[in-house]
Amino acid sequence: MTRVPPELRALASQLLLLKKEEDVPESLLSWTCLKSHPHSAEIWHVAAPAGALVLKQHRHPRPFQQELRAYREWLPALTGPSSANLLALGVTLSLGTSSCAAEPPPETTASARDQPPGTLRSTGALPLGTSSLTSELSLGTSRLTGELSPATSSLTGELSLGPSSLTSELSLATSSSARALPPQPRRSAPVGQLCVHVPALLACELAHHTLALTVAPGERLSLGTHDPALAPVAHLAAGRLLRALHEIPVADDDPMPLVDAVAARQSEWHARARDLLTPSERDALQRLAARRDAFAGVRRVPCHRDFTPDNWLLDADKLCVLDFEHARLDAPEVDLVKLRADVWPDRPHLAEAFLAGYGPLTTDAAARLDVLLALHAAATLAWAERHDDPAFRALGRRALAVALERAP
Image 1 (spheres, rainbow, N blue to C red):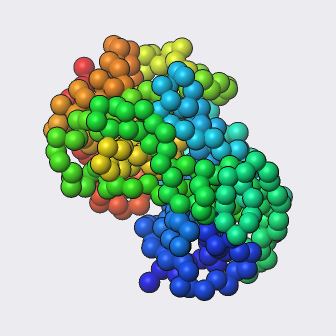
Image 2 (tube, rainbow, N blue to C red):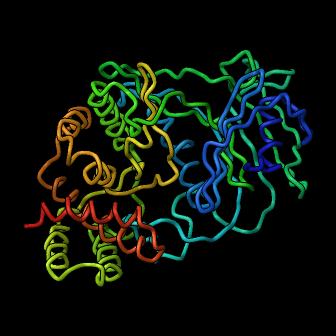
């Protein structure tokens, strides 16, 4: 049985039981491990009489920082008029520092900040360092009165987390609940028969790379347990959400033009995958790579970068998009790559429904998608070979087959 880390127990006690002590009666908290991956994250559903939340503890700083940035800076922007008020968030967090190093899954992001596999560095505005053991914990605006109730005041306290007695600053600001953090319905606009949601960020604990999120109901669309008639509606809703995400005005401050960054990534991953490909496959990938001129002048936009039905929860009239740990600025078509590779080949009607929400692809956008799909295939095959991962190897082969159909 997976053991609950002491720092998560302390954080849940602070949020759900409004206690500072680490030792909380086990009967008051119910823990369910939703995921425990040795290289990515551990995710827990925590329930108490006052409500429930999800705690997501990342193993490494980069995905934590990327997900935090998405929840802190990008998703609140989806409440603006340009996105038809698809989402209602409004979280203000302060940032701290942490450090770690590890090899992430295969990266095909086009950026001057990219490093070869095996290297890790921060890629966004969030700092990455080693100078501080202080963690700041921010929530959303309330006061401590035995339960979280609507208020406009704030307070600061101290919280001991884990055996190291790490000090954490806790500042509280807006909760729309009269109880302690129950699952909250989020304002959203109807899309067909569905409303679009994302989990709301309740708190972040920086020293242990932990996010506290509202509970998202439903089951993953990829499980196939829903009425098949809802799949096109879900794709339509997902397309609308993705378009709104891509249209958030964020400056592309990467010094390397996107077209040059794509060329660099192609060179790296094609070299790594070379011995895994036949001569005809290598030639076809090179012909696809030559279409990278379609990236000239294109700016990077906020991207989810793992946008698949495996990260979409469907519940009654709601579609909730999860897992922003890979989110960063990139070419917009990168969010269509896995759909094109894994979902749409056998179900073209889902592609049609998605693009009805997202918008049609221009000729240049279609060319960029072809290039990125080929790059994704090569990177996945190379990563799978290095890690001897049969599942990733199969995904890479499937992506390669789809990509080669588009080779001139």
